[in-house]
Image (cartoon, rainbow, N blue to C red; front, side, top):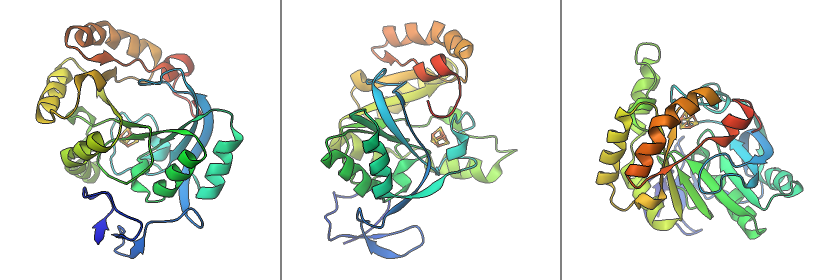
Length: 263
Ligand code: SF4
């Protein structure tokens, strides 16, 4: 069987082939020899979602297929940076940190087929694995919590300033077939970034189109890059969540540390 990375199909076996973005046919990468571009590896508390406050080792893959205007990690999206690391080295650095929880984030970590051996090795070593994704790409990863953050129309960059990226972003950001598959195969949480009260209507439309998503697993979090902005938006978003059976999602890492790397 041949598949393209990100194409929603049945769970592949180790015998399946993939066709990479450059059209090369290959088997799933194995642990040995696989390399990923990593923007940063650090230890901190999880700042968002069901596991807020949990001490975790974070691995931030560099590169993203989207370009949200409000992206809080531009060094992994707009201007991707980092070093090329062997997956074995990434595992060793995570192992050297104390926490049992490992968070594989980005950028968009699902861009990397190497996420498959990385996540499977961390799971084999007893780590609780969370993967943070925008839900536009699928990989058969090992994952205890799939943290999906589908991007609303409020995320699209300015078509005037970034015409190419505005088009690419708008074409790629909504991938219901991928989100459906993730919801079916993994324990998920769904986090939506809300900028204005009007965005809540769009979240409701999104959920109406994907009834597979349980409302109890949906969180709305305010868009903002400092504590004051988040606090202002919480004044109307928190009551909205309470009244509509959704969870309000604070962004504790920004509230506590501000918008700095390694948190
Ligand atoms: S999907 Fe995430 S990493 Fe990518 S541009 Fe949007 S906010 Fe940044």
